[in-house]
Image 1 (tube, helix red, strand yellow):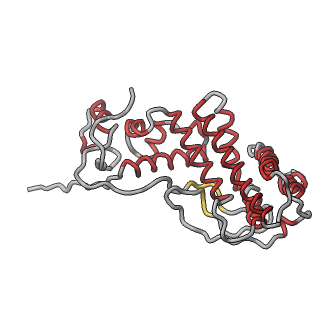
Image 2 (cartoon, helix red, strand yellow; image 1 turned 90 degrees about the horizontal axis):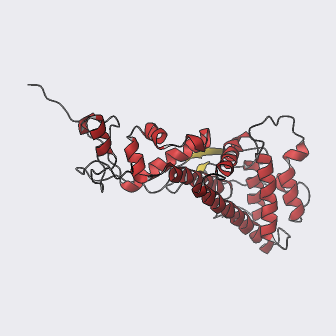
Length: 294
C-alpha cells in the first residue's frame, strides 16, 4: 500500500509576509530600477501568486513608493546613523563622505535619479521623495548642529549648510550612469571642500581625520542598507547597496487557512491547494479570501 508524505510548509505572519515583499521590491528597485517593481515581478521573485502581492499592495504605485522609502531609509541609516556613539561629529561626517563616493554608492544615486524623474508623473512617489529628502536634511543638520555644540564646526545655520552639502552630493550623483574616470580630483572632492569651507574647517580635515570604526552588524528588522565597517579617506568605500530585512518577522501557527490572494488565483487557474508552485502553506491570521482588487 503506497503512502504519500505531505510536504509541510512554513507559514509567515502577515507582518512578516509584507516585510518580505517590501524588502524584495526595494532590492529590485536598487539593482534594476523602480520601473521593474511590479506586482507580477515581485511575485515571481518570491515564487508566489500575484494575487498575494496585490492583497498587501492593491496598487503597484503604493509598492513602488514603499520600495523607494525602504531603500532610501536604509541608505541614510547606513551612511549617517541617527545614533552615533562611536566617534566625534567630524569623524562621522568624514565617514559619510567616504561612503558617498565611488561606485559602491552608484546604485543609490541611480535610485534617487529614477525616483525624482518618475515622481513627476506619480503623486504617491512624489510625496515619498519629499519625505526622504527632508529626512536627509534633518539627519545631516543634526550632525552639524552637534558638531557646533561641541566646538568642532562653525556655522550660524546648520540646516542651510546641510542643504548646500546635499545639493553638491546630488549634483555629483547625477553622473552615476556616465564614465567619471577622467574627472579632476578637485571635482571628486567638491562635496568635502564645500563642507570644510562652510563649517570653518581647514583643508584636509575631513580626509585626514582618524578613521572611525563602527562595529559591523547583521541586518536587523526595520533594516538598513548593507553593512559598513571602518572608513578611511574619501574614496575608500564600505559595502553599501544590499537591502537588509525590513519590518517584523515571525511565523504563524500551523493549520490556518491560505493567504489572501491565493484562493482566487488557484480557482482561476484550476489548481488545487496542493499544487501551489510557491511551496508555502497558508499563513496565520489570514482567511482564504482573495483580498485583492480586480
